[in-house]
Image (cartoon, rainbow, N blue to C red; front, side, top):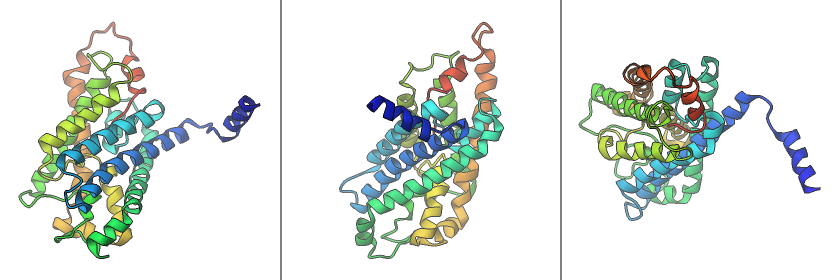
Amino acid sequence: MEIQHKRSMRQHCALKHGILKEFLAEFLGTFVLVLFGCGSVAQTVLSRNTLGEPLTVHIGFSVGLMMAAYVAGGVSGGHVNPAVSLAMVILGKLKIWKFPFYVIAQFLGAFVGAAAVFGLYYDAFMDFTSGILSVTGINATGHIFASYPARHLSVLGGFIDQVVGTGMLVLCILAIIDGGNIGAPKGVEPLAIGLIIMAIGVSMGLNCGYPLNPARDLGPRLFTAVAGWGMEVFSTADYWWWIPVAGPMVGGVVAAVIYYLLIELHHHHDEPENSLKDKYEMITMS
């Protein structure tokens, strides 16, 4: 009886269209990434560094990406990042008509993830800020959700930072999922990809906190704009907001082209054509 009930539920509730399944997977995966990542920043800031530090933030984003990959990887590839999706389009590993669906799902997942963090820590936010939500100042909290540049960073420097950081993320992801390369054991790919974020965090986090992901940065930034921080989230630091949106997209494309020209193009021809695709569909990206 129970088996029949489960079958009936599956028949009535299961989605028939593949793109809808992939949309939901990207949405939920990005939600998980932002909840763990921004949640780790919130705990650190709102506790005034008594329950967190830079290392715990790196761990939060690394594990968040790893879990996002496990959640969405088997359905959509677990991109959870428009820059990764664009790189896959360039390499012919994602159909271009699917790209807008992936990006919308990623932005919505990031927006809802930020809302969840704010709801989870609402009382702590009110206590920390006395009800005044700001981007700058001693009790600033806007940086919990989105990136803002360090004082020393120029616009050009910030753009280069995002191109290089995201480029390394995409380059290493391609190496991990490449069936013609050493790769990673089946099921371990998300762990390896999470370690990429850890490496980037501890080596390239000084300038602006390694956003590397237009959805992860702009989605929560939009949430803060409507949740009480106002349009200051866009105007601060000479309208910095577009840097972590445009920079990662450029970096993802550049890395995809470099990996293809320097590595993938030179694989032995007797390698099965779909080996990379098969491995890629099992896993993730950020």
